Length: 382
Ligand SMILES: *Cc1c(COP(=O)(O)O)cnc(C)c1O
Image (cartoon, rainbow, N blue to C red; front, side, top):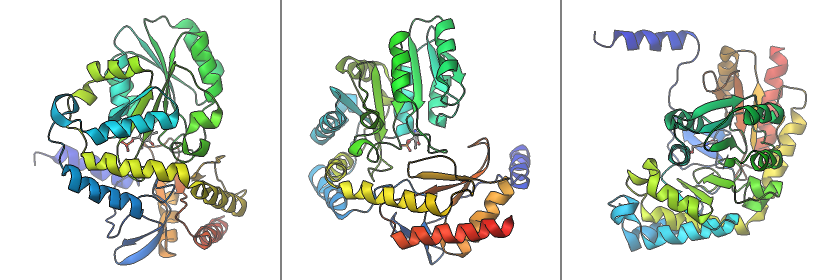
């Protein structure tokens, strides 16, 4: 068998309770989803504001398809950049208070573009140990010296900054850590960036739309600087797909000229930009979504106090468990009770956990029921 080595590796993963499979969903993304003919309360999506199936966004996507067709037909730099792409970039930059923005097909590509575009062999990238996989991949691909510091440890970062010579320095962080739900010390990071003449790159995949009146983690922290290069993804709270990078005009022009993951790919369908303009309007106008989300966070944390929740005030509420097997068992037991909660295991995270995510789309009763069922299961197991 030409693939026996692959089969053996898969079998080993399975034995360690680390085998991965997809779940097929037969409904739109939402607070409840249809799986195997059953409606489950969905606590694993990143649709934090409940916008993924919002009628205004659907209508904008439909109108966008009528106006612009479906395919963009080309890379942005050739013949794939439409008026509505441009309009979205301007709106996104204005919304987060930056001079310019550039849109990307995915957040993963935005991270690759910024880090590989700005850095090369003579440069250094300083990165939090818990950064998203896409930042880590980008750092490796950039060929820059890759210095990782312990999670949120500003003193350790400062030692590295002080002792690592480089042509250019970039500090790269998740603003909200995707598997832990906690936040980066942005004001402190910016201070170090200024002190050591570095750029600060902030990946706000989980803060945009949710924090700082929807404008994201920098607005929430009250920090701004021309050194700051901001990235938000649009497949999470924005309920669409893609990402944008917002920065000084010169940075955007540079990426447009040098960032290969921007240059060598077909532009996203223009209808998506039209949908995202509708999504931006909802993020700006509907503060009640963020308020309702905060209530859900308080409900869950109140009900599960002392039961292993990590410290987090964001919609990402991870609950640490003893082993990958235990994580899978808990996830399966919750599923029997009608709740879908993902078991996240190594190598995605260092220690196994249930990753509970909350959404404004959830009914208060569903959140209370999840907390009650989870508590009962944890107490039984103890
Ligand atoms: C989801 C995520 C990404 C990737 O964004 P996509 O649009 O899904 O490719 C990047 N960074 C972080 C922190 C994320 O959570």
